[in-house]
Amino acid sequence: MKNGNRMTIELESIKSKISDVLNSKISREAASNWATKIRKAGDDRALEYVPTSDEEKIWKGIIYIEGIDTKDSPDSYLHNNHDIEDFLHTL
Image (cartoon, rainbow, N blue to C red):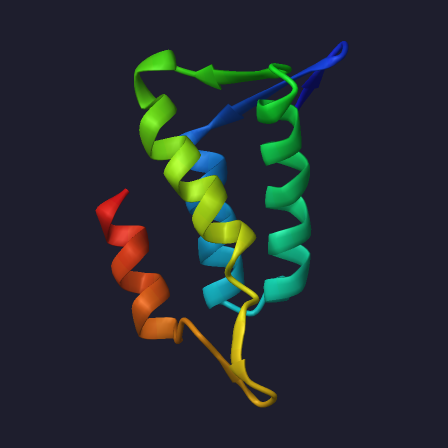
């Protein structure tokens, strides 16, 4: 979410985005693009973690989602759905 020039991010948003990928509601590429925008806001110090106590988990999720579209061959993603589900459970 945007708040002026700042963005806020919650752990539930991360979990929801991962679930959307697993349920084919969005593509891996769309999720990665979303995470890239969030990461850039973090790099620019324009990102607020809600609550701040979840910052480490949220950041871990952002980085994971940013690479969710990485392929290990032309027809195969590096992380399969089982890997993604396992990651989601760590959050």
